[in-house]
Amino acid sequence: MRHTLRIIMLLLLAAVPVYAVSSDLETAIADHQFQLDIYRKADEQFQLRLTDFEQNNTFANQQLLEASSKKLLEQRDTTWDTYWQALRIQMLEQADMPGNLKNELTDAITTEQSELKEHQLELKTADSLEVLRDASTTINNKDKPYQHLAYRSLAAINIAKNLTAIREVEAFLQQAKKTIMVQIRDTAVRDERLRGIDETMQTLIESKLSLETLLQDDFGPQKTYNKSSFDRLNDEVVTIYQDIQAAYQRSTELSSGIEL
Amino acid sequence: MNTSLIQDQSQFAQAQETLGAPPELEKHSDNSQESKSSKKKGIIISVIVGLVFLVLFSSLVVLQQANKPTTNNLEVTPTPTKAPQSTKLQSELQRLEVLVKDADPELPPLAPPPIDMDVSF
Image 1 (spheres, each protein chain N blue to C red):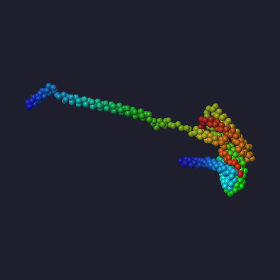
Image 2: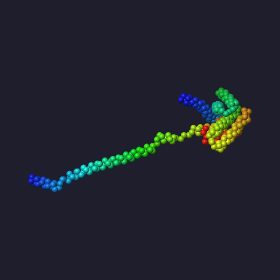
Image 3: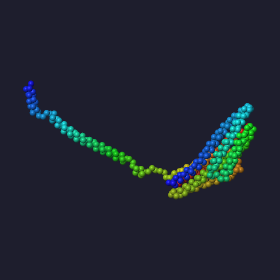
Image 4: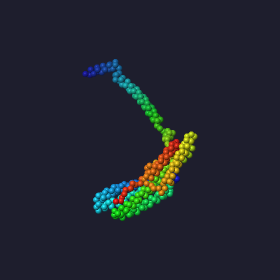
């Protein structure tokens, strides 16, 4: 009785962190979406004030423009900060991302978040269009490295997720192979299934090699990442993913009728 | 007046002698015999009807008991349940399916925010 209770307690304790991780990510994504919506509204407001100021260059319009541009810049920083937070959580969840790459990317994200905080402090004291213009320039200059880091992180997460899927399907096939050898008496059926498993395993090994090559050759920190380079890399990952999906389908067929 | 009464009584006596016992008395004795026999018949009929009802009722009870499933029958044919091994296979395949779907790179996990507007003025 005590032993059973102990097992139940352990299971509950193990379930709490798993739930907490996924719930943290969901909260972070929801927070980012919320801040992004506020940013878009602030952008609309800024565009209106800018048009007013250009058409009627009065002191009142200038003050309204200053206020709206300050709000927009602050909101932009907040939005990026929530984005980094969600990306960091997602990256930490990846068990199959190479450790050095994970550290490099999370460190880079930490640096960007620190710079954002400094920028937010600068904005608080900005009280003229000139100062705001400088703040805006700083942010625009940072936009390219931001995008670069974001796309690199996204590509790394995609590759890591595919590596995890390969590892899990491989482990399942290994287990299924052992079970088939014991449970299926018909030699012809057994041999056919074992041959199928070996072929599928071979496909998965090739997919894994392709992903590792992408990480080594096309994914180094020296590479420049933008939307188009991300899309190009992602197309290759999509092709590999289709092979993994087919391998999974084949695994379900090969394991039919056996009992793990 | 008295002489006429005496005459009537003698006439009556004569008539009784010739005719015998008054018919009412004979009739009464027949009725008592009939009622006794009808009572017997009634008792016999009610006993037969009672027996018929008893037989019908008891046969109905027996039939009901025969159709009623007993606890032994349930034990003989238990509800079929899936073997735990096949459930393990299914849950393993479902877990893999979720993992594989999650790895779909056509759906980026979190797109970078489209903050590309130029704030300078």
